[in-house]
Image (cartoon, rainbow, N blue to C red; front, side):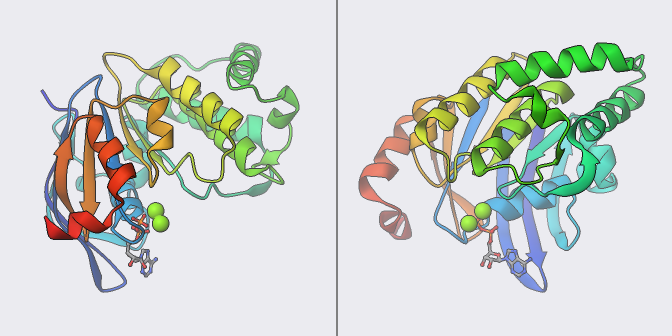
Length: 249
Ligand code: ADP
Ligand code: MG
Ligand code: MG
């Protein structure tokens, strides 16, 4: 059984065709890495799956647990277990991180018909997760991502992921701009979340992150299509040869 199944996906942004027939099947517990040159459509894939405004699927299908993703509003996709960590996390000044996290967890639990967590229980959980990602608890009181450094934003995102317990997690260049310590924290966070019932799509331009999060499959995206798939050794091959050689495929 597939958790996420993408078949012949075409998508456009502002009348420009970006994804041109992308197919990918992700089963529970699997970690897939998507690599590829800048502009190949990696972020577009995450956006179109998560339902970001302006990113339109024009052909093909995508299902999450056999449910048509494109039939759902963006919030419903998230509540159904799809999580996207953005390449550029947004700041929401004036809304405390804690309120924001609680609101998202409440919404997901309500959709899944689970009892809501009371404020005390949530606070306890959030503090634990802060510790796991090495983020000071003071960050719970600050505005969402407001004045956070690049590394702090990424840690915060991993914490959000831990709290939401999604089924399919897409991490879009979560490694960009991170020093080696922050990279390790992000990788540890992801590895701690690995579960036979949860799968990951790790989008990265560089091989480095994959030293820490070892993928089951590596795919190369070029001009809106997956042009090559392999095991983790493919990432090393890409690192060595660069992306130039994929044009000859
Ligand atoms: P990647 O993440 O692989 O670097 P993107 O998905 O960000 O690639 O971009 C793929 C292509 O789509 C690029 O040519 C980019 O310029 C274009 N694109 C992405 N978003 C927009 C947008 N909002 N408006 C116009 N073009 C866009
Ligand atoms: Mg890019
Ligand atoms: Mg991108």
